[in-house]
Length: 236
Length: 292
Ligand SMILES: Nc1ncnc2c1ncn2[C@@H]1O[C@H](COP(=O)(O)OP(=O)(O)OP(=O)(O)O)[C@@H](O)[C@H]1O
Ligand SMILES: [Mg+2]
Image (cartoon, rainbow over all chains, first blue to last red; front, side, top):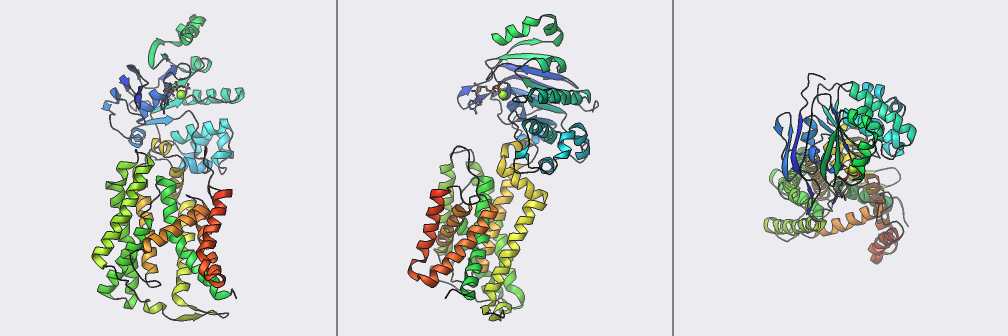
């Protein structure tokens, strides 16, 4: 995976829902193997940033450049095929499809390095549930399935939106552990979270968002050195 | 007496109805568009078959050529409509899609009037299916038996398509969350096109197969679409299984009505629809929509 190009540049994007502007001048970048976190409270625009990159809510101004290509006007399925995998926050599995059917319906490149077996190696819980309908899985299992499903498309960059939201503490721990495995494999990620604990362990950089803007960019070292730093930003 | 013949009449009517209603229901499930013009596709299928038969005859299996041509023509017509017109309307309010398909109803009606005039036309039974078949317990028209077989084969075929093929699974996923599916690399606009064309083909084939059994005339589109709406209201919009059960129910109810209360047959059907609407507005097999 290391030889795959990973070069995302988000340049001053402005994104709207209808008439209301949600993102203001958001810029950041992701390189090979990097995990970049978007931190911020409810409604600051983390999801909107991801949707802007995924082509679901295209920005009205600014640019998303992926490996040198301007992604303006590229439809979501082409964004996926270009190597950007979006894992939404609300676990949108296909509830009436079984676990393996959920994995089967996605687009897959001919040379995908992800097989069902490899997916089940990383998420062994899913192997036992292979023939169960997605709608009958627990929250944690559904969250694993959303990630697994996107992995099947062989992304070079994963947009992970609040993967631990609404999970029981044990499931959160397990999820953080699995994301760690993906990071260790060299998968680049943009990771949105409200809480800071899991992000500290995983991310290379943190962008603190507030009212649709990036207010500060911190490294885990800076945050560890000053425990009140991130809290201060999050309380702004 | 309500006997074997009446039951078979209901069955063949129900199974034929299923073919048309299934397309309407699947199109709604995926595109979320209630296609008023589906009856028009059916009618056009009948006229296309008539036209082909008029030109090449129907001996030596040529009727089946007419049926296939009708299916292909309607698949193309539907594909063109989706690609160049309907597609522009998905981002608009649903009312625009409804108005558009309603405009299509009028358009197709006019096309039929212009090309085939307003007098009723008929297609004779294909030679290999003329006459009656002795079933042991009763004698029954071959062509209607054949319609039963087609309906069953189509139902099984559609079931296999949806459960056993990747294409079918993708269509099911599209009914559940299209935005997510597109983010997973699936070309959802292509799925829409294929589903609309496939529904059109089903309607066209149904119309062609119905042509020998009834007279072709403008207005047959309205009749079939009303029946289809009732089928999907009873069965549940978007559910294939619902369309199947709904169509069989309507078929039997009509047969019972014609036998016992001939003037009131349609009232029985409306009554059933009203009961379903009051007690299970999402239909017998439909999914209760969140927030409705
Ligand atoms: N579909 C929509 N239409 C209009 N406004 C929206 C829509 N979705 C989100 N918003 C608004 O956009 C703003 C940013 O929302 P967004 O979902 O990006 O925040 P978030 O940081 O992901 O929040 P959370 O932590 O709750 O997921 C919020 O004020 C929200 O109310
Ligand atoms: Mg969010």
